[in-house]
Length: 368
Image (cartoon, rainbow, N blue to C red; front, side):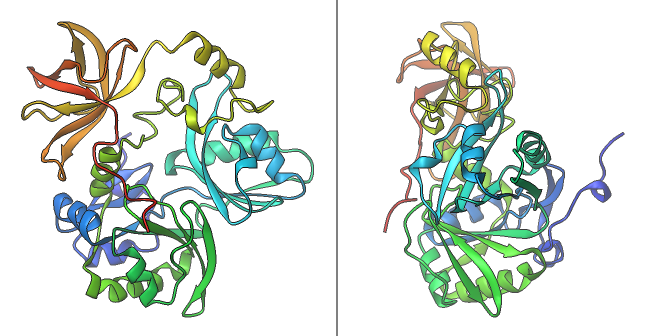
């Protein structure tokens, strides 16, 4: 049976997006704004000024109780010993084969209080796996609709939050508790665009008030509502992976060049044995960057040829509004060197691309 718009979940800001003239698309079972005034306009606003995203479709799950931190550390790939309370960490939930169930961010409030933010479509599965493995005394709760997530991204993001009296300037991948107009919220120095910015965790029913306040406060700083179309072009310019395309049950962290998010010396995490074996043997393919030599624009699923022979597949691809050329990510044999030319079958035309190491655009996440 085909999925209709009536079957899709909606965030608490849906009516505001309609009022702003948003065009909608399905993301992970949710009806989300794809764009308002245009993907390139919104992309440029984030790179040059500030953009405001509703990403409330992202999952949320809490893990609480004595030993919660140690339990999560024994399940997910990254080493939680690297961070302390008030800090966040990118990590992966793998299965025993080393495939990626999801990539997510863990917010460590205390050793007995963690908040996880998975991707929308995978929230229930991450919760299921953790709940099934949790020891007595550790509670795993699905909090998907308890919190909205608003992302303020761009070089003027500090000014926007400052205008509302919200905390700014804390370290990258850290967070601070705050209130605005009686609403308790969490200001996280995280994002998915490559720009300096923040993500705000807001009670679901209060998100509208905070959204309105951010747009009003940001009006003097060039803020623009931005949809998930611009979010995709922005993250592709950074080479950030998207689960389901660049990471999946069939694409391991080793293949996706995400080994930096694996605590290789940890005694236990899901998929450890398989990933150690793959790392030792060397993966059969690796995620690489592609930059167009000409006017070709790569799209997911397109075939990549090396020396005239099919050798890989594009996993993500788009037109880069910043570089004004086609860019993408592709799984290629490990022997293909940076700087090599490959051909991508773009609708029957063999277009030449240079193999490069992402990011395609210099990130500004840690500046300031």
